Image (cartoon, rainbow, N blue to C red; front, top):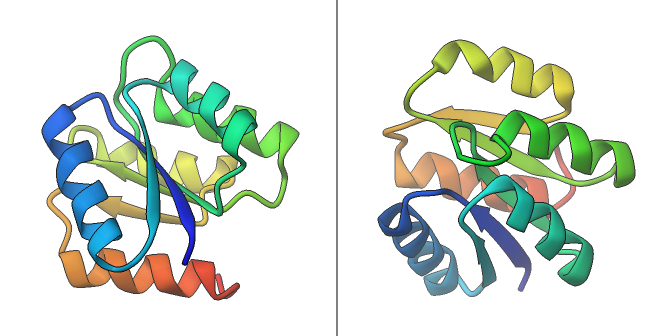
Length: 120
């Protein structure tokens, strides 16, 4: 299916999300911070990025801004559980969709499939 980059500083969140995506037939790549995410995106050019907002080194807003600057067509889902007020800014910077933790698994998978099919 698709290659998806999962970016979150919490290992259990990455593990759970990657397991869900892999069960749906997708290949996943993991990054624990924004700097690693940018590097992995450049190397692997995944079809979709799912990023947390609050992270060390480089936060999700910076990831969105940097990826959109270099790869304008990148599809990004931004997720946060700490600062839901940052989600409108994530959309302004180019996130394709935003979610608040805890999110419903069905909603996340619907958005993943919608974005991978080319709808936004």
